[in-house]
Image (cartoon, rainbow, N blue to C red; front, side, top):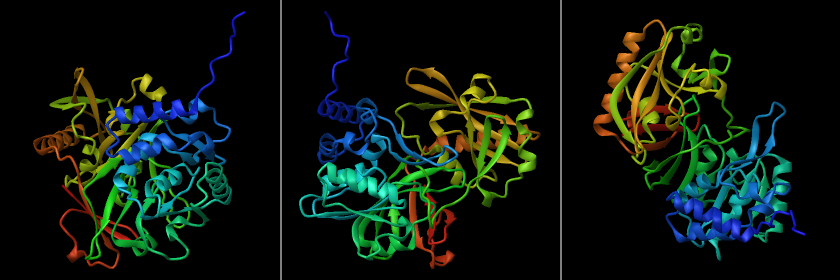
Length: 405
């Protein structure tokens, strides 16, 4: 007789396979981060999740709100690895993590800071904090301190840290993080730079003149922080399965924008070609921060609407769009060859000629220099506007930001 049972999965082999997948993407920059991924047993931190899912290269949602939205998750292993490389942890570092979730990231941090460092991790929900504490103990990381509290307030003991990492989408660099990050230290935070949800994981170094500076931004998406630093979003519904996410500070005319999709699509191809391996990931951030007379938004289109041909925004830039009044234009692409796409613009609304022309001019401006990385400078909120570096200005309750290219 032949057994029909599937062969048992080996966690150690799955860890090796996941690490190899991340390495194939070019994410690992150091042996330390790669080795940590090979050691930490993900299955212990995801009880009730089958092994194949626990080691899949994707996010695993572990808690949802009553309306079904994700409240907590184990982030995509690849973005976790990118942020750990951004953080640049060294043995002996004292680390503060904001957002314990399952405890997986705290375990990875513990591996990186051994043997003489320490990890404190803060989680808002008591059940999640208890779960992280239990998981860390079961995996042998009893030295990690898990605190239940509002991560925006940092470590309640008020100590200072060499590294701070935030594992939820943040609207601000809170006053507590400013105070608790040692001069010369680094914070890695997925910061929402625009109300549309446009987020970048920034590696910000705390300088001796009291600023934080990042020249390393990574595209990411995270469950938003809850607690003291929650923020709202503004969505303009264009159709049943299509919304335009905008920033309320841009004063969008929602009444004018709502019917824009009813106008026939005007499609134009720019002749601008972008290679798949080209460092063009920040084109959407550039559109959001360059002076143009147009406001920025992100077009979210359900699969059903794509299938019907209602809208087809470029996935690479998460639906990047610009608008003015009741007319909007979004980025689309068409294949040139296996390695290259051509940028296009699709415009809807009553002012098609003007907006499509402005959007085309914008893309040609971008194509001349093709800036790869923004320079983001963070200042304490008490800094006067006249003391800020040139760049797009972003105000938050505890932080002033400039974004330059």
